[in-house]
Length: 146
Ligand code: SF4
Image (cartoon, rainbow, N blue to C red):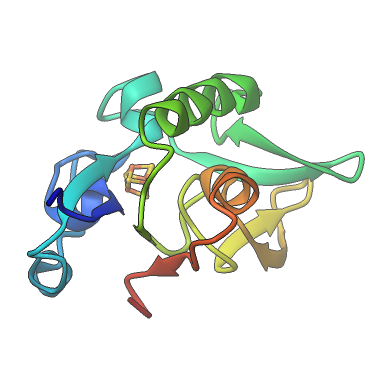
């Protein structure tokens, strides 16, 4: 019988894929899903490489956009395309554990900025937002609650 599949933010698995080249690896997550096929997920590293410029979720004209912190580029579509391609490869995941507070992976914990780059709210990163619409039967977890 094939194993169940869990999608996990790659930085939680010890991959050195954070914007600054570091990791946020948590052994207990790997242990908990030891009987699953673990599918690492890091859309930012796929699109921009590592290390890379930091990005943020910014609310512009009532829409959430992903904007680079220093160069002010809108990279929303690049990330969307990468995340949608990933979902096509793994439509049959059984569980999802994402990194909290990230502009890509955060689920209900990501700082949402206004155009002055002040935090106005907490919400979802772009990947969590798309996953919610695509993996409708899976409850998304993060490293604070998995
Ligand atoms: Fe990659 Fe998501 Fe971790 Fe950011 S939070 S480094 S996008 S896996």
